[in-house]
Length: 186
Image 1 (cartoon, rainbow, N blue to C red):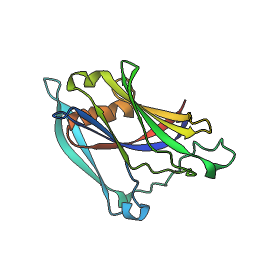
Image 2: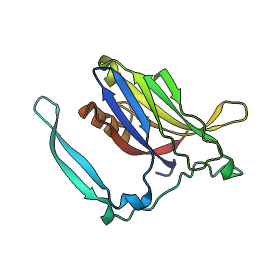
Image 3: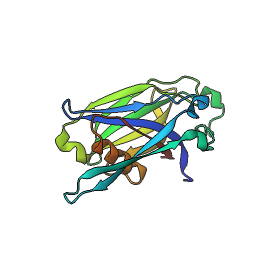
């Protein structure tokens, strides 16, 4: 989309026994190692009780794809792209209100940061359907605040991939579900 400034890879998982929602910013793989990998897609249908039911798995070998590596372009407005100090904030929202916030460490002077961090939120299963995540990419400023570059919404209040990711997490409890999301300008 025209308003996207880049992409972010997120992994979500929910552990119902511990009532724990985990958000992980994954380490990208070495592009040379990708050719040996495969993507596995779980295919779901809905039964008569409106529950997700697995109907199969599709496997796609990455060696047959021609996918260019696209660097994050959100820093293009800065004078010196090598002096960016990005970090990521994750807000847990309930009905649009901020319930909790966590943030990554600042990656100094890194225009293409890799965040290898997990954020854990305590979330009772009874409110899971009322929650969303707002993942905001920000630039650390000299006053200690952060200038927001863009964001992603994931959850029932999102649209498109944000809703799909949330629903797949709910359908595969205890197992991480990873997806790329476009980071949209604020």
